[in-house]
Length: 412
Image (cartoon, rainbow, N blue to C red; front, side):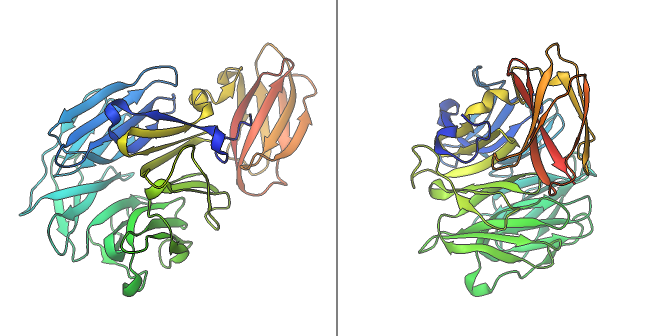
């Protein structure tokens, strides 16, 4: 079985989250621990969070509170988790979800549901959502003191579903009926952007940037014939181009690994991937999935592993989930040091294992072998990849007993 696991049906496995709770957010820490958040929506409302140390261990439920609002999104920053949800719900954990503090937020004259949260490099917290039952529902909460005090901004736009900050000053929020807001002053003021004709305005579910210039908005429209939409900017949000805007399931979430490889998921079992930085997108099929499945979140951990979460507890992960933390098979990760990484061309590789390395291989994101170099003995080697394009690559080291470990390499 190949160790690139993100393209074929048989490379994914299904597990159900505890109690079948909706999975609205997935995160994997550097040590391999996976954390999920969500719950059940209104009526039988439940607030939920759980963690799993690795593929072989059981889920440990950290939150399962009947009568508490469902969590719609979370932002992970070091050991801190910032979680936002329905009915003014906002919680903070300072120890990776072991304990939680519920924050009290200013309330308006109607119920507000929060759908997205972001924390800037300057530690400003932003939560976006909408007033329920109001014609003009867009609302943004901001805190600069870890949630002690809040400023509240109402906007004459529909409900906001996503917020993303490129840096401490520049951020975007996107939402229903084509709503897109931009700030250039750390959220003190916001400007409404007209990026699509009002007659074809789409409902935007997610906005993200992979660098200061290139970003994506995705969503669609569920009214009448469902429309699937992906927009892209290459100039920091000044202009947007429709990469996809056609009949298809609405997309809900997007994640990238580096600048080239990305996955988007959404309603009716929708799952798409790109290998060229979002220029083109191709659907891929998850096992047993049909139009009755609804996906809410995707997280790409490395070239071997991505996780997809959805309603009624659906979690898909690639078969190599067990290599989350070490990213190697058979050899401990500490045995090799690769630097500089990112690199402009020359890699310095230092190996300290007992058995000798016999071969180095370089693969692209599609699993195609680009280089194969025999190790000439010793503990150190230089490898020149200056002839390769700027992208993500996988370096594979194989010892004399065919054990191997892998490293993700970023070529600038």
